[in-house]
Image 1 (cartoon, rainbow, N blue to C red):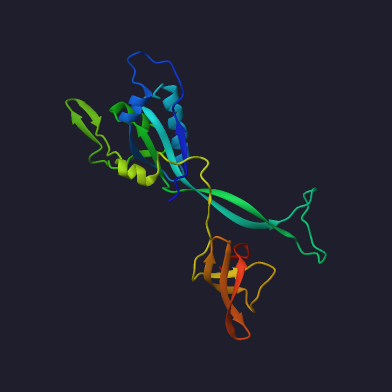
Image 2: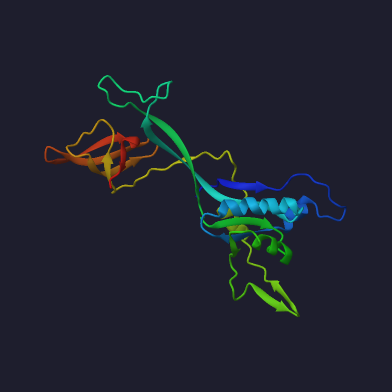
Length: 241
């Protein structure tokens, strides 16, 4: 699991009273909690909650808001263009292709946002009031609240343990983490050769081995009635439909 993550830091300096806790004290008291969101609302919840925290001056209550992501590096082919923006062609009139590197971020835990905060009834209300947030993980309609006298209060959700925080890498990731290369197929998958060079009678073949270090793939296909292997660049192969 990658340690990379999208995070919001609330460490900006601001004026506080002499009785306000220091940032170091806040960090010691704050714990990590998980909030569930509607599908596709993770970033909206993060941005909205960040704005609420800043507008309400709650930087001493909220330390981090994190959406853990994994950076994946992929090499894809596209038609090359000249300086005028027209597609290049070779002497036979065929389009010339070029390889480009593409980095994509994938959410490791879709529909979840991780928050490091000091848990209190008021702070829970701040989080729960964000559109798209469905509640804290560990609480449901049966145990989320209880009546104390004439007042309805929120029960505290379970915080992540220190071991869970370490395993998830919530406090170790950086924006400079190197993107990992991910193959779009695995050994045994049926693929199609898309490159100009096809060593088989039929471009549809089977993945036999993957060389991640050299970004190549060994495939098995038919030639003269026999099954033979061939090593090709990973960019020359795609999943067969």
